[in-house]
Amino acid sequence: MLKAHPYEEVAYDLYKLENKGSSVGLGRIATLNESISLRELSIIIKQKLNMEHIRVTGNLNDKISKVAVVTGSGADMFKKAQRNGADVLITGDMKYHDAQDALDIGMNVIDCGHFDTENIFKDAISIYLTNIEEIDVIKSDIDLNPFKII
Image (cartoon, rainbow, N blue to C red; front, side, top):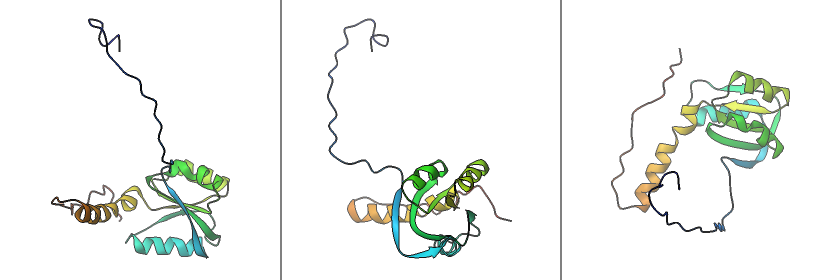
């Protein structure tokens, strides 16, 4: 502060942060009611997100009970998901070398793509804001996915 204000006496106060809430992190982990194969889970996700394709790393016959989810670019979370007992990480933007590393440690990954894991949010936030705020909500109908599937 003294470097930014060398010409005057700087007035400042220090306050101790005492956050009482718990930290929940970037993603979520949940346990399925019944185990299903990685292939079955991938197909369900593909249908629910209305996707043309989906990328999967791992053994398609593996039984999945515990699922970790990080929307958008969460590929770097696969080790943390595995440490927390997840059988699969569902995310977007999985790079080739990250997929190789996940395969090497036996971690399954479903890569839904960055756009498809975040596009569903605009519907949810639109409904949420419409229900709690006295404001006009305009939901974009523009498709901003830069990739085309050929």
